[in-house]
Structure formats: C-alpha cells, structure tokens
Length: 140
Ligand code: ATP
Ligand code: MG
Image (cartoon, rainbow, N blue to C red; front, side, top):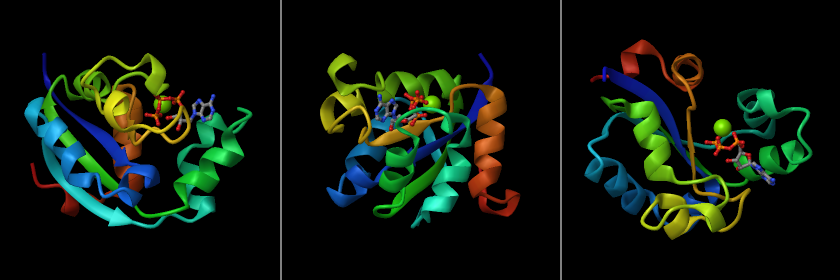
C-alpha cells in the first residue's frame, strides 16, 4: 500500500463544540499524519463550489448553509492508504450506522452535521487538496 494524501475537514458542528483536538487525536492514533492544517470560515458560495458534485441532491442547500455556519478546520492527512484509512476512522455518513469508536459514532450529531469530511478517491483527494492548499503550505 502506497503513501497517500487525503483532504479532511473538521466541520462546523465539531468546531462549535471544541472537538478539534479530540478528532485530531483519532487521526494520529490511526497513524495518519496531519501535514497541513488551517482554520477558515467558508462563505456559502465557497461551500457550494467545494460540494458542487452534490448540486442535484435534495440536501445541497442545507449542506452549504451548514458548512458556512461556523469555522471549519481543513487538513491534509498523510499515511499508508490514507484515503481509505481516513474514511474508516470517520465511520459511516450517518452516525446511526457508524461503527463504534469512529469519529462519527462518537461525535456526529446527524447525517448532515456529521463532524468530518474525507476525500473518497485519489483523484478527488488531489482536487480537494488543491482547492484549499497551495504546494507551499504542505510540508510532509
Ligand atoms: P463527506 O463527503 O462529507 O466526507 P460522505 O462521503 O460520507 O461525506 P456524501 O454522500 O459524500 O457522504 O455526502 C456529503 C455530505 O452531505 C455528508 O457528509 C453530509 O454532511 C451531507 N449529507 C449526505 N446525505 C445527507 C442527507 N440525507 N441529509 C442531509 N445531509 C446529507
Ligand atoms: Mg463524500
């Protein structure tokens, strides 16, 4: 398994509840390294651009409102098979289906307000990392 990079977002429901450190501990315990990180406030338009792939979904407007409702922490995680490993640590989209010990099982409030985002494939990871970070900001 190769070393990969993936884009992670600690979402507004989690930053609001001061959970950044607890969530980062889960990543680090799983062997993922946080090689870039910043706390930013998205506008609704920026959230809409990031989640454009979901434009036709019924929850799109609600998702964009939510992502712009408070600061988020965007991160690049690096490690062996980081994309799949991060999604394992995150747990299922709906916290009701998330395995015990995962971030969403422990912290998510609902299927929409589910504490974290993680890229789902190498192509989307590369696109999503460059959406938020320049090469100069990533020090592996
Ligand atoms: P993410 O892309 O945020 O890592 P995911 O890949 O597990 O999550 P997606 O299907 O890509 O899930 O959905 C993107 C996000 O849209 C979800 O994380 C959640 O915040 C929101 N979402 C998904 N399904 C619903 C729904 N039924 N109702 C409200 N919000 C939803
Ligand atoms: Mg997704």
